[in-house]
Image 1 (cartoon, rainbow, N blue to C red):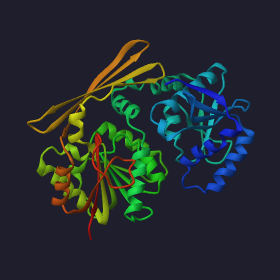
Image 2 (image 1 turned 90 degrees about the vertical axis):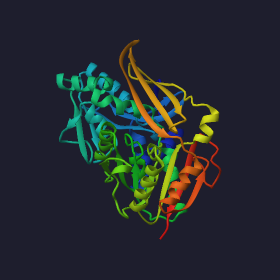
Image 3 (image 1 turned 45 degrees about the vertical axis):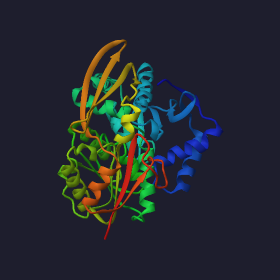
Image 4 (image 1 turned 135 degrees about the vertical axis):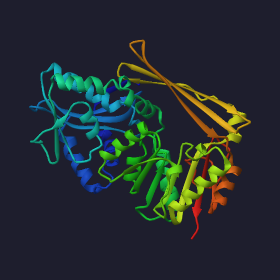
Amino acid sequence: MIHRLRPAESSDFDWLLALHRESRAHDDPGRVRAELTRAFATRDYQVVEVDGEPVGVLVVDWEAEPAVLWTVEVAPAWQGRGLGTRLVHDLLLQARQRERAVVAPLEPGAPALAMLRRLGFWPREGAPGPGLCLRWDAGPRTELTLRAAVSPWADPARRRAWAWRLFEPAPDEQVGFARFVAGRHGLPAEAAVLDLHAGTGRRLRPLAAAGFRVTAREPDPELRAAAAHVAAVSARGIEVLEGGWIDLDDEAAHDLVLALDGALWTAIEPDARVDAARRLRRAVRPGGVLVLQGPNAFTLLPAGLDRPARTELYHRAQVSWLPQQTVDPHAGVLEQRDDFVVEVDGEEVAEWSEHRRLALLGRPQLAHALRQAGWDAVETFRDLRATAVGRALGRDLVMVARAGA
């Protein structure tokens, strides 16, 4: 992933406005537009492009003393892939060469807050605008912080979650489907959503920005720490809890449960699936809705198990994800192995493997488990982009069930 910067043009305004509104979903749209109009006329906006596509924006005032980082924003589909970190890292290298300090005025809970703290910015008084002010000064402390922030593969406690975030799908389709289901079933405007097996938390902020009250559960401690970090820097009151479906004992606490990325497929035995479905049924209020998504055994096996390997660039690092899948037909289990390899300047610096066991499931088995657990109106959708009930013909199985009164 190679990015470039170019000066913003008047034709970029509408795209920048849409990007700005993504991070300020609860602000008055007229106010957001007025603020951007004033800033666009007086500041040096730089559009970030990858392969000619606009993916972010950077606004820096080098004439001020200290220099001011007004804006660094990345489109939701590109978040979690290191692009924002790279932009600020390059800015700080310039500041070090110019022997300049950099300040960043932020609103409390701004999405960039965690990244700037990770890169060595520290709270200071005297923001050039309202809200919080962070400052970066070149020095031994910030040099060490900066090197650690752009070398996450060197930290065993961080690298697994960091690598997963590089390759996790953008949350747009998942959040869009959640909004569609909530509207279709008449859920409250600020529905309480449980994100089961939330991973590194990429969905959490977009779900909250859509107006949901979000609770997340994640059994993996390293992934959960990453999700908790997302929640901690959000101004939207996201709660992250330990455990998955097996630890769920909530009663009538949620309007919508999202069990995505094979969360329920981890229940290998039929009795375990029914138990999981009962726990989820107990966790929702009357009329609540469950969304399931995971691999569809009946189309996955005839089509072949291979998932393509992928590679991402992160600063000087090349990160490769090498997935493998095998089937144990006797046990009815899909064995997933994911190998990660990190190379810096052509030299391998880190390698590790992840293992996961999922049940081989199709629509009949899941529908049976859901009805056994008391779910009503079980429906199937072609994929997460669908807006009408359809047949399960793709590699992923998407099902929606409703809790009766």
